[in-house]
Amino acid sequence: MPPRRRPPPGRARTDLPPLKIVRKIVILQLAYYVSATALILFTTLVYGTQFSLDLVLSWDSLRGDTTLGWMLGLVWMLNSLAGIIFLLVLVVRSKLIPDFALTIHFLHFFATSLYTHSIPSNLLWWGLQCASASLMTFGGIWACQWRELRPISLGGIAGSGAGQSAGSSSQPAADEGSPSRGRGRERSLQGDNGEYEMAEMKGVSEQAV
Image 1: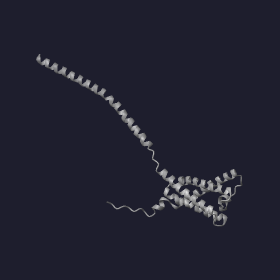
Image 2: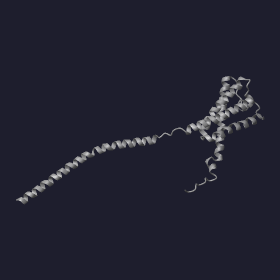
Image 3: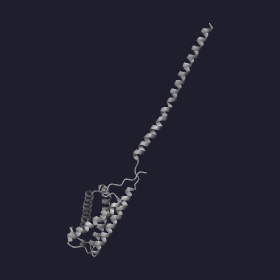
Image 4: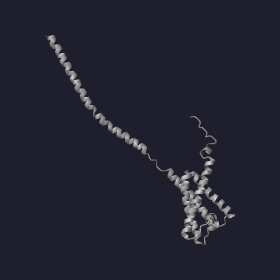
């Protein structure tokens, strides 16, 4: 048995190059913030309050003693459901979902800290981030595995099989015409035999004379 080849050392990097990873992270982060901004803007319009960037990037806006704070928490959870769709479209592979989902929330923590110039100290904000990261991770893994396990449609093979069956069904029709040719051959053979017998009888009669 021949020995197995060892994969080249740079194969893992060629499968998923760093530039492609960075590009996916940037696109996912932008999609995460665009979706959150749209949902928060719609919520403020319905609630009748003024929209500001603090509602998106400030951890102090998530408060448990105001209705707006709870509504923002619900909006961020809805945004996590939208993030599952982004992960399904851009990441595709289920084993990479936890890395990208946690990276999104880590970058959000970094952006929030830079915007507020302080590390978040609100327990509701931390609890929301844990719940959002868990939802995106498990939901993204389930969605990717569901798509990976979907049955492959064999429409082309089925169509060729139908064409083959149609072709095979047309063959007996062509074969049905062959007995007619066979009968013609039998008639010609019978005619030839008859002429041969008549010629033989003529020869016999001439010898008798």
